[in-house]
Length: 113
Length: 112
Image (cartoon, rainbow over all chains, first blue to last red; front, side, top):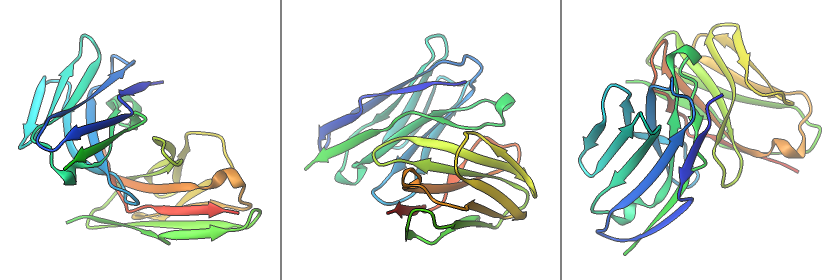
């Protein structure tokens, strides 16, 4: 099955700086890659996703890039704010597997004021 | 708009007791439904998913079972809880055939 690895496991950044989280996946047939943000005690919330037919997607301060050849994708958060502090998860899925998600282990992001 | 509910929010149960967690979705029809477990500080593990009433697929062998008695209702059960069943249980839904999953608020289960 699909194996998704996520790095780093923890990330501390100064407010206003950028944060980058990287994920690799093993199944070249995967074609959908969402990112979720989970605040303490809450369910994960979808923040951005990308499909395999594009290489980059941006939504305000958040962007995701995908390199299908290398089988990795990254989340970029610019101008970080204290409210960006949370655990972020990447995931991968494919149509032939009913789009069941395989998750990375998560990255705990702390934005220092 | 669509909303997903889970209850209870928290639950403390003794080892060997039964379990029933409920998930309901509003504002959509024929959703795919999912149960995940999240151990403390860990990622999400898919336990069950369902593409329709009475259709349940189990992803990992375990002490739990799932049922879907109605289109927008998904239930996670156990006859006898184990200590290892403690965790944060999340329900999710997606539109049938679509990729994007949306998560509920979760139920925190502590088995003592």
